[in-house]
Length: 367
Image (cartoon, rainbow, N blue to C red; front, top):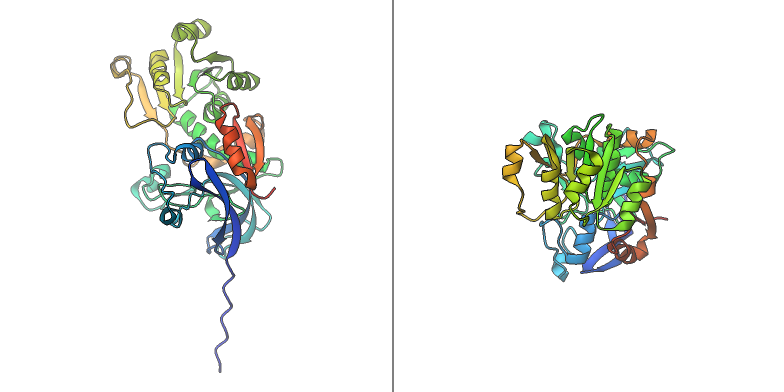
């Protein structure tokens, strides 16, 4: 009896992707996407936010001191291909055979980092520190990003959105989780007074998360008036110009004391110094922003006043919490969205974001 012919494998798809081919040069190119593996879903990408690291790669070819992009022909032919984008949400269009908790048509937010699950850090629940992490849109891991029309992702790291939560909000869950990781690590509680240096997307989201955790007084600093105005609109009590004369004294006059927690979200060395000066003895300074390999800090003051200086690297186990906060209305991300751009205008979107005033800019691969 003749063996039955095996079913042909589903064909790959040719999709559009925004690819960084040089400094400040994004082009929409054709890329091929394979069918989803048994534990993956295939998605029609709907919203992809531009992160500060994406902007750094676009402007300088390097971000966070990690890997300099190779824009040569050989470099662009390798796995990463200059395809960025990790703040994202989409609609499920195909399901791997082992996926049971999602179905076609589901709207989902993607957690972009997929850890190995087996190393010591993963087993301890700190998978954000996994050395084998595959993080989409990462030049370090050479994993293509989601700034494209169709994308495959591990189903376990896709979170179904309730009907009243938009895909735009779904994309913003990723940067929100960075802020939530910071607030969670510090342990902000009811009645805390908080200082945040830097009123960019992460700084503003840190303020929103701190207030959701119970902080009753939030001071935020920046050099851009439009961002301080946005902070005021969000209900942040004390927006303050970072170049205010005698800023340390000005903050203490407003708050009446030093701060219970300080979050450095600007990447400016003088801001880190200010956080140490402004922190209450026995409190915590959390470094959220990217920094060069070394930066001066008042270690003697930190030691003498028992100020803990801690870091934050991405997030772990927080997407469900972030989604619950947004879904319940305790955190409102909608006012942070400055503008949407179609995929073919991706370079224009980066130029707009680089102007310094927008808070969050989104690419819509399938408008």
